[in-house]
Amino acid sequence: MDVDELDQHLLQQFSCLGTTDKDDLVKQLQKVLAGSQLNETAAAFFLDMNNWNLQAAICSYFDFESTVKLPCMTLLCETTIGEGESVPPGTKFRKSWRVQNSGTEPWPEGVTLTHTGGSRMGECTSVPVPCLPAKETIELSVELTSPPEVGTFQSKWRLMTSNGSYFGDIIWVIITVNESGTLAVTQQLHQLSTSHMNDDQMS
Image (cartoon, rainbow, N blue to C red; front, top):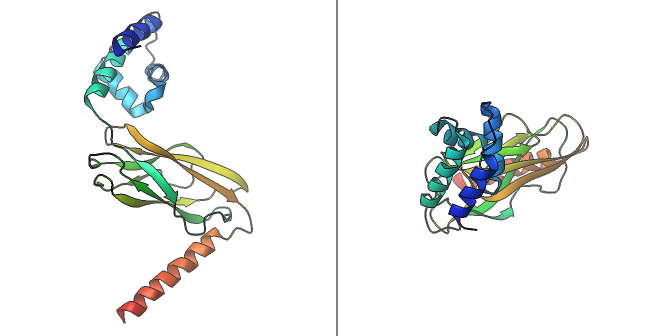
């Protein structure tokens, strides 16, 4: 099915919808374009640009996608210090990953690593990401706080462009919260030993 056929199919499918509720329209646009990972901000942008006309917003989106090429990102590995250890409840810890710009163009300005679903762990929901040249790798980290109750929790993160388009592999934060968890202590000890080594090198 080519884009024209898809457009016609979507227009027929949604021609009977008469809702004017903006939140509802955002959800409908996300549902129709489910494969595109369109977030709420981007969906609202396309709808607002087309006076909240769902059919026109769908056409605008396809026009946009045909001219804009999203960046590329491949998740190489997790590099979290103490990975696999559990975390005590309500404790700050850091998660880190090594990723690669697997595309042919540098990442644009304004890219962020953004929380997109699952458990929200602390106040941090977005961290800025520097422009990365093609084929280069970088370590990304987020500072999080474990939930107050024990159990296993997961949180979903994506790289996002400044205009709200997600790209690259999904990054999952999966942690076990346990009263006897040692992850935060392991990270603190690592930080102390690293800063101690740096002091020795400087003296």
